[in-house]
Length: 537
Image 1 (cartoon, rainbow, N blue to C red):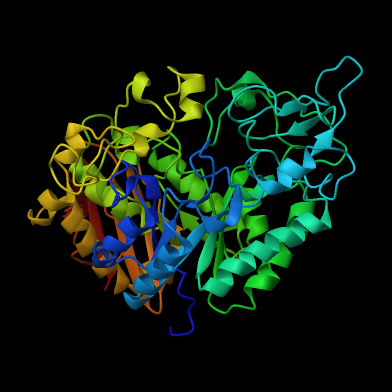
Image 2: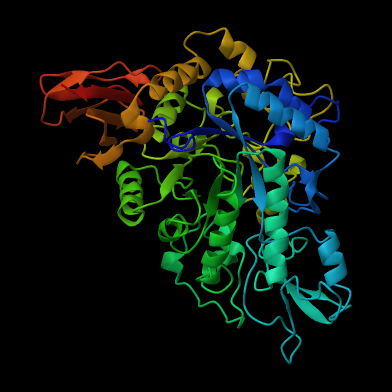
């Protein structure tokens, strides 16, 4: 057991710095705010934190457009603040992972400012540049996830540059060995500072097709998105050529070789491709990434059949790698609303935590999940997300899951002394940390109790998984490790259900946190959003 890497089976708490805690009264969260709340995070029973981007940036995409990968944006603090955060987290037994954005930079990055000047400067080939077609149109049909064509004209070079995201996020040319080395150099900068790992944003977007071939059209029946909606033109293509290229694997192996020089560090890749599960399996093969996660459980489908099929497909293809699961993050509607509607159901919130933390793999929990927060309804005039502003009203963007953490029930929720960068809804203030700390049956206290219990269950932290046949809305599986076999049955619905108890000798096991089901005369009785747990006896 002691030889098991810390990240296998870990629960990783995602912090979105802008919305965690503001300590300097500008309405935006900062690194000192994270430091102030590290004791709270440690009290949850999580193993690590993942801090979303805090690097120097013009904030066109709120930090995912980086202008300097080796410095902290003054909005969030200083490098000294980060070092203090790292030291305090480590003192509390928390590992620290940070975001890295390899595939693109801000258009304000010194690399791009130089590259765009001419076709013969030292960094002329550091980004993806291409000549116009004879009629002046872009070199191919590639589209941006954020809307429109993926090419922007640069008059100084009389060429187009590629941007898979915002036009202010030009794509780096990873076919250039100098770009790969520069990327590894800044990864080493953070490793030398003492970080324990990295969450790699859009890791399959590093390489593009060197021949710039057109993406083929996708039939309307297949336009289902992962991180984008079916009515986004981006969904109208198979993205075979603008991402997930075979050359990416070689770079991942170079990255892994660097990480292996820093024992105990880990790389977690975010993957959104035409077949994200297959790509996740490929990218987590030996000598590549330690873990991968996709958007496959960040979708609207909440059926037991879909969850089972998703996990089983990954289990069948990922022979050596390690999965990481998430049902909420900073890019999608919060799960209790996405799957349960409004108002947010605390019983569902407790059950979802138990469900995602009972799958085989590691887990990312997004700030506020431990409070059972639902999606905030942010009016158009308050939107800050360029993605949502572009596609409103069919897609309202990502601001609804990014509103500030409610620490107290006051008007500003204890988040700031100034007007927050996004509004904090009254229903969130009613679910504040302060209120839930004082309520023994709160989602927060259920979260803590469940994670403490999970740590003591080797079958859950590292065991094998085997799904059992069940009728909707019941999801049922076994977890087995070191002679321990646990049976878990989840009622995914808001109505009570009865379901046959699987054959075998089962001893009920008290699982703190979610509402409990029971077995009676060979039948499971599961109240709304309840969980039945038993041990093979």
